[in-house]
Length: 174
Length: 201
Image (tube, rainbow over the protein chains, first blue to last red):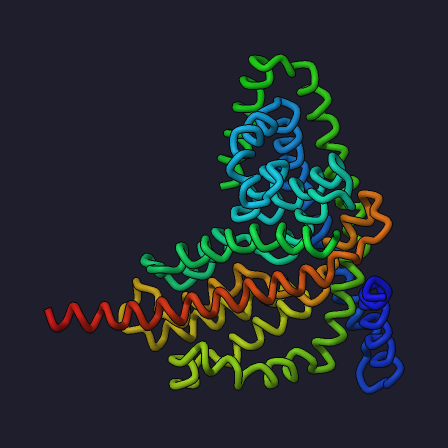
């Protein structure tokens, strides 16, 4: 039931946009085209970055380092209920959006989108953002040098996010 | 930044790959990576275009404005300096509304505008104010009602139920946002007390 409702989320939003277009008050379809063109430009624009990072992540996985690292942290991670396969995502998520998208998609390919690892990765991906990048850009844009307690707080929220995502998936997808 | 990441990862992978005896896989990994990035873009660009187009319609219809007006009473609690001076609160709620609707491209400019306004009333221009920190930390916990990228990537990876993660994502991102607001409010009062203590000493 919930599954059914949530799968209607996107169609409903699309339909609301359709209602606006019918109202004829403003050239809404032209706005749609304008926005869609921007979206397409963004998606294609990040491709070169994505190619570099996807190759890097794939090499990391193939070299066996990922498995080695995963094996190293797995006892500690297992105690917190965090699958150690998530390592490439956890390393890249705070730093870069493209890198974590690459890591996320390679996780889905490797373990399957509906596996426990894939579900945890999806929830982490959906409820966190590129922490260091955000803090860096926001503060440097107005010339702030001392960010005080910003990074400790953001790290705490990120750690909670990882832990809570895995816990939630364990309960939700039983 | 990304150059450093790429450099470190590729050197590390080559050395460890050879030592660990996975040298042969590395060659294929590069080819698959290049191919994977292109197919990733193909699976993303349709839904990204659609979503950006729809959000442009909503933007033009004034939905961001309405949502941010709804949010602003709540935000006054967590951004006391901005609400006292009246400077920046509008941009902050526009930033959060854009995040909620999943328009990341619009959210960042609003946030940077808000930082600019908050900086105006900042006495020490090199040090972040409490409101600035709250805004930044809140933005690191993404609050997004419909995470389209995730659905698209899950579907592309062959998921039968790409939407099944939506409610866990809502719960988790709401909790993370609440936690970041609480932590920042707590730290705000702690550091205020610390500052007062310094003066007394």
